[in-house]
Amino acid sequence: MFLSQRQRKQLLVEPPSHSSSSSLEMRSSDRSVPDWTLTAEHMDLLGISRESLVDMERFIERRVRATPARSVRTSLAIFLMKMRGGESNKVLSTLFYVSKSSVRRCIRSVRSALMSGEFVRENLGLQHITREKIIRDHTREITKTLFSEDPDRQVILVLDGTYIYINKSGNFKFQRQSFSLHKGRPLVKPMVIVSTTGYFISVIRWVVESANSRIKQWTYLSRILPSHQISYIGDFVRIVCAVSNRYLKPLSSKIRPSNVRCYTNRLKDNVEENHLDRRTACLRPVKDVENFPLLDEEELRSLTCGTYQLRLSPNYVQGHLEGDCAINIHQEEPRLLRVRLQSRHVSSRTYQLWIRYDEANVVAWYCKCRAGARVAGICAYVAAIVWYIGFARHRHQDQGIGVRNWGEYVEDAANMPLPIDESDSDDSGEASDTEE
Image (cartoon, rainbow, N blue to C red; front, side):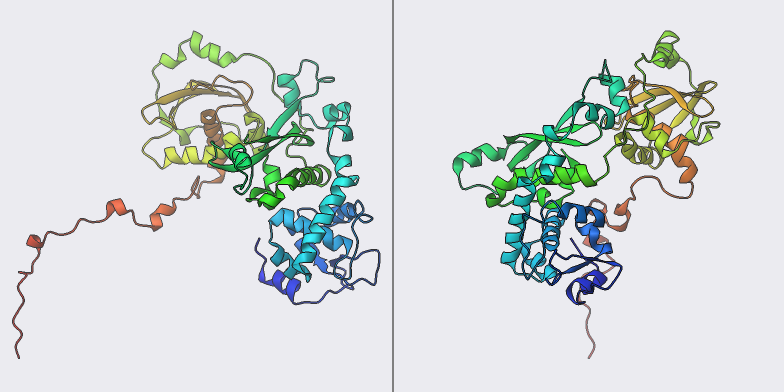
C-alpha cells in the first residue's frame, strides 16, 4: 500500500497531537501511556471506520496488554493494517515507532484475543444468528422467488470459497496434498456459508487443494502466505468475516422487491409460432431507434439480476461500433425490436434477438443464443442492446464507449516496414574518391 507525501509526513515526521479535534487519539485506558495518533483520513488503511475501531477495541481491551510503546488500540490498528494492506512488519514498525518484535507480538496477541474472546463468537458461526433472522434480514427477494416454495420458512444459503496461496512446503506429503493442478501452485481453500446478501454465516471446514471477493479485499490473504502461518489461516479468515458482518455494508440489498415472476417466455412462443425469425427484415442503424424508454443503472441491474452482463456490455457494443460488424435494428411491429448481432465467440455466427418495450420499461426479451430464452435475468446480447439504446447512447454521445485502445500509442512489430533491397538503392555502392 502506498501513502501520499502528506500522509508520510504526518505519519513519520509530525509528532502526535492529542489536542487536535480532527485526529483519532489512539490511547489506552492509562492516559499516561504515550501513543501514536491516527488522523481520520487514514482510516481507509484499516478497512473500517473510526467508530468501528473504537467498538472493536472493547472486545480485546482486557485481553491485550498495553505497553510503554503501544496501547491496545495501537495494537489493533497494527493488526488491521497488516490484514488490510499486507504491510511488512518492517514497514509497520516504522509507521508506529515500535520494534519489529513488538509488531509480531501485538499481531499474535490481537489474533488470539479476537478468536478466544466474544468478537468472533458474536459475529460469526451458526450460534450467532437465528434461522428467522437469516430469512427476514439476509435473504434477497429474488432468491425467494426463484428457489423457495415457502419463503417465510425456508432458509437459502450459499457455500462459497476462496483460494489462499501458500509457500511450497518442505513436507513432501503436505506438498502433494496442497498442490493444485488447476492453479499450478500450492494452496488451501476456506469454505464458508454465506447468505444471498453476502452475509457470512460460518466457516465450515478446510479443504486441501480444493470465492469470495470480500475476503480478498484484505490484501494479506490475497498474497502467498509463509508456511509458518498456515495454522493461523483459519483464524485470519474468521476474523475478517466477523469484521465484514459487523462493520461493512452487505454486498447486495435485501430491501428492494424483485419483479421476477415464474412464467414462460411468451415472446419466444410468439416468435416461433409466427415465424418472426424468417420474415424479411429491413435493417437500419441502431442510432435510428426512437421512443425506447430511458433506463437508469438501478433499472438495468434489476433486468440483469446482477452486474456481470452490464460489465460486458460496453466492450461488446464497442466491438460492434468500432469493429468490422454493425448493430442492425428492424422494427418488427410497434414497440418490438428485432436485432441481429455477431457472436462474441465465433465470428462466422450471428444471433437474432427480440426486445418488447412500453413507454417506461422493457417488458419482454428473447435471444436465439443458448441462454436467450431465460426470464430470470437477460443474456449478454440482450443486455448489451438494452444498455446501449436505453442508457449509454444518451450519456456517451461525445465520448467513446468501452475500454480505450492503448495500442494506438505503440507500434505493432507485425507492421514494421520491409528492408529495402540494396539493388533498389540510388547509391552505386562504390566509395567515391576524396579529393585532397
